[in-house]
Image 1 (cartoon, rainbow, N blue to C red):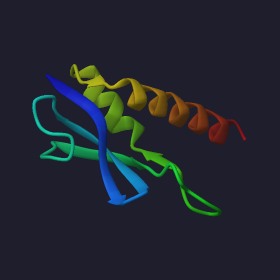
Image 2 (cartoon, rainbow, N blue to C red):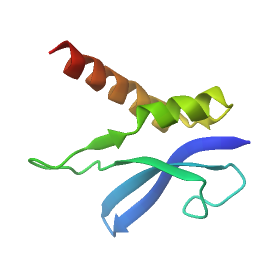
Image 3 (cartoon, rainbow, N blue to C red):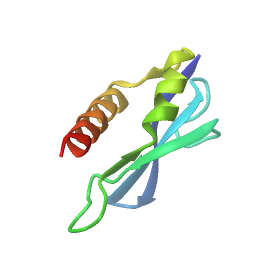
Length: 88
């Protein structure tokens, strides 16, 4: 099964996550099919906290990829931010 999940990067006590599409059997930070964005939980000032390629995420979901709970929440936040940006 294909899943959309977070892959951890960054230094100790400074997490940084890539949002990746991967086979569910591969390890957390192992091989992935496609990187569709990133999440920086410690973003400060002008740094971007979340960047997602919503078109590619929707493509993978339509082909059966299952997002994890945390990624589903991030997708929801990204869609909400995109709706606000287009409305303004």
